[in-house]
Structures are given as structure tokens and as C-alpha cells.
Image 1 (cartoon, rainbow, N blue to C red):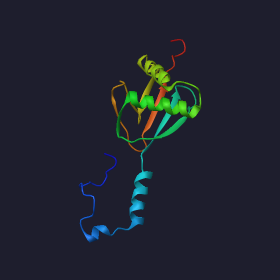
Image 2 (image 1 turned 135 degrees about the vertical axis):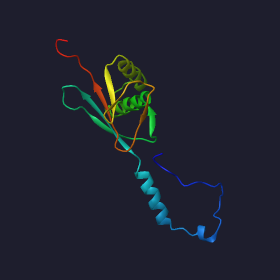
Image 3 (image 1 turned 120 degrees about the horizontal axis):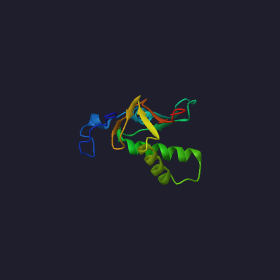
Image 4 (image 1 turned 30 degrees about the horizontal axis):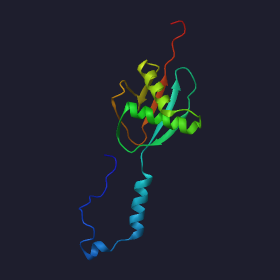
Length: 139
């Protein structure tokens, strides 16, 4: 697991006088570090033979997610940032259908993910590439 949280023993009050004394700034500092340390991943669009497309960064809250869910999040992020009046659920369905027709492939840290129900393992710095496939000229 990427993050660990202190174990909670079920008690409401500290058990000793020493436990009642705490340094508020240290506790705040620890919390701030944990909140700022959410892993960020990069999502990029690429087309073979074309300049690199747009990139987004996104916080991840789990280290494993199914590919179809990752695609859904990417579509929702794109729709939100574009400001277009588009139904993100409909756009997600269209995108999932395109994946099924081999309209694009998804690479996670340069490893191709081939099925929508495959689990994708994420970590801070993961790079997710949506690579649109284009037919060869004359082929």
C-alpha cells in the first residue's frame, strides 16, 4: 500500500499523561506532508507519427485500478478541462468502444494493457499513454 495510517485502537482518550502531551505543530506538519504526498500520475495522448498531444496530471488514491475505470477518469478529466457541453458518460462509452475496436492502445509505464478488466498498477510518477493508431499509408 502506498500510504499507511496510524493504527486506531478504538480508544477515545489518551491512556497516559505522556500521550496527552503532544506538539500541535509536529502533528500538523505530519498531516501536511501526508496530504501533499498524494501520488500524481501523468496522462498523455499520442498519435503515431505526430507531435505529442496534451498531457494532464491526476491524483491517484489507490495503487490498483481497472483499465476501464482509468479510461473513464481520463475522459471525465478531459471533458472538465475542455469546458465543452458534452455528456462525459456518453463520451466514456464511445471511448471504451473505440478501445474495443483497437482505435487506440493504452500504455502504463511503457507496458501495454490489453483488456478493459485488467488491473493497472499505479505509483507516483506513473505515465499513462493513450496511443491512437493510424493505418499505414497504402496498407
